[in-house]
Image (cartoon, rainbow, N blue to C red; front, side, top):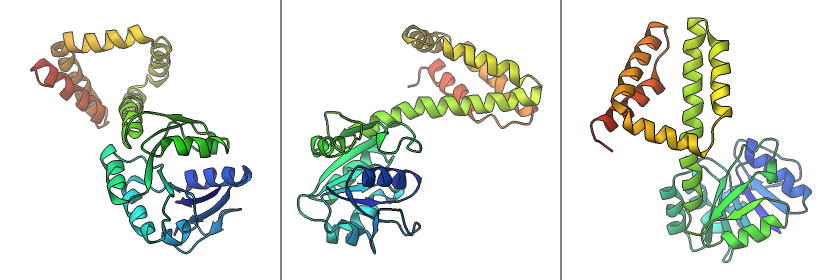
Length: 252
């Protein structure tokens, strides 16, 4: 299996090393990373893909389309282009429109460091089954999702609204609690709340947010005011207030 890896940063280099160990013939290009052990360095994107059966693009969301554009002169007919970047569904569809090659939308569903090739991957697009067969044979954990390119990353990004939003709320709340002298208490309280979450808790959250939007909007306005008094900018508190106010006013 001849694999080109475009982007040899933290994630790309970890996957590249595991591919080499698994027996793949790996070549790569990254203007900022001179060498990765076992990976044949190529001069540019087109040079990297010219003899590859599978291309893994692991750059960044804003480099996803430029990487393909630069690689097109060397891309062989029948090659499979797998985009591992956390780009929008629209960007994934733009990749499909830009090439005749089969494009695979790969959503990495966990941090790559420490897992490498074993990072769970959710994939969609015309080449998803081929990708799963090729990468699965090298030890990757791949789940095929029916649907076009963009379907896999859509699920990851929707999940990110929760995970990253939760993380932002916890960071902001703890910053306020630190300033108020009760960080240990709040950390323990948050941990206990999260430990008790299940499907019913989610239903109660959603139902309560809609039914009590007016009272909760006022509460979050007060919370934001307190954070300002403590010297903490209330970014997530203000966002929560705005959402609750929109629900209160009948907006969607």
